Amino acid sequence: MKTLPKLIIQEEFEKLLKAEKKKKYKVAYLLGFEAGMRISEIVGYSRKDKEDIPPLSKNQIENNSIRIISGKGKKERIVPKPKRLSQKAISLLPLKIKRRALQYQITKLGKKVLNKKITFHTLRHGFCSHLANSGMSLHQIQILAGHSNLQTTGIYLHANPQASIEKAQELF
Image (cartoon, rainbow, N blue to C red; front, side):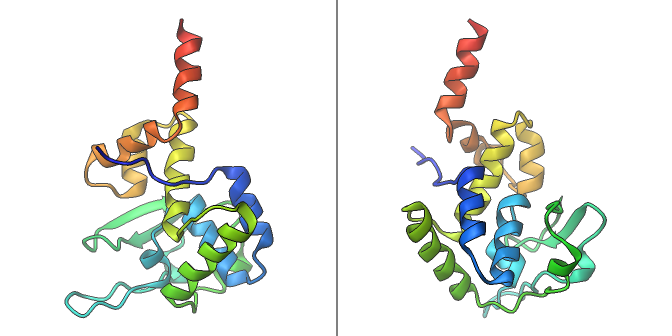
């Protein structure tokens, strides 16, 4: 049995964002939670056995979307550009942050602000769960998340059992 992903909700994300002092970290958090991007898609990733993944750059941002090279299999996908991603924030790209530093900071902040053990990937789970709870179709979420298997996306329907219970009660 697959375990449900750890995730955060919008209100928790806002607390994290408010508590973070460094702009480059705030930009990374926005991209993780409001665009569903993986840490490697934001700050890049050097791999010994495979081709490197470059960090997100300004030229990948279009009007309302971001064209990214996935950390999984070098696939390209398009994700929504967060509304709060200002020109000033875009000018910080590519972010000069080490993966481990970003991972450490979000974990430390999650413990301090939310009293929860979270990782950067928790932001991505929050993105997918938020979309699922807003009524977006699983297929649309699958496309935005870059999941190759619909079953992977399906876990977000189970991530909030309370919403499922309320929806079922509305029907009966």
